[in-house]
Length: 441
Image (tube, rainbow, N blue to C red; front, side, top):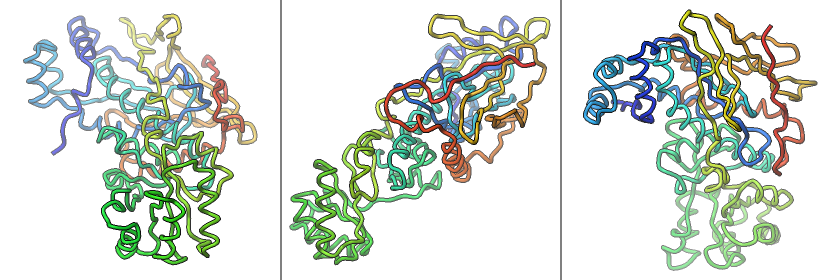
């Protein structure tokens, strides 16, 4: 039995709904947009993630007896609102950037259309999912770029809330990580899982040799032995003595990694274990990974930094009303005009402008007076960025589950190739390409 996601919602959404039912504006056709005014941390691009999770949560966005009882007992809304919510089912449409797509300031990442009552209650759910997942994916993509062809494993479950850890593993996988330590992420999203032993395994045994021998007997010669519980040089020597030169790998979790990795590689080669891989962990982020580019490292394991967005745990996205019908049934664009928080009104179609396959701009076509401004499939020198996820309340299941996650990963790795070279730098800077707003013809 699934649990409702309807109360993963800020109270003011339901009080606005109640007020709109009272004054007659609840049924007014409206367009909400989820976007980010700026890229967190001076980063040069963002990565969209979380859409597939959001669609599954939307399916369970129902107000059952328990939810309605709570709202009634806490006097959150009145009787008319409870009656409306009892039958609530999102019947509008949702369009937006595919998971794994790159975004920039002002990109219309998600567009939610329906009645005001239909769409306003989805604000918190949409923002909580996409803000978290996109922050993780953006950090993960930067790490993936820094790692180059070397594989990355996500291993940050112990640094996140239990459900956030699963979501973070999924977002990291979409953005280029190849595996996760989290078994639930493997089961739910089809992500390859990995893991061998921690320092406690070595400490459990009377000697390091006993621990290594037992691990090899249990997991086979291709296992990775953690060699820095005690003295690293002794640990490496013991590992090869126990497993032989066919040992799969050793892991380093401490020390000055560039120096230690070089010393361990030299020692392994001297011992004849030229094919034994070196995996490094130890609080890596994109900068530490980049610093190891010239080191003899074969793979990375990243924990805290990736699940926390590498210092920026939110993508700073917002959810705003950008268009609605007036009392006469005509469409009008609406926008917030506050200093530093202004938004662009109107329904939008977005394109990635390309020159010889390289992104040069984010072009956003804005329309105020529209009846049904569908996103064109083609645009001069550009690639259409928006897809339809929900139509008349029906969810496109292609974006969900393990298949949707794999598709999002493939899409990200493909569109990342469009980035100009300056976007790959890790230093703080302006967005890699500008966002251009143009009026529809």
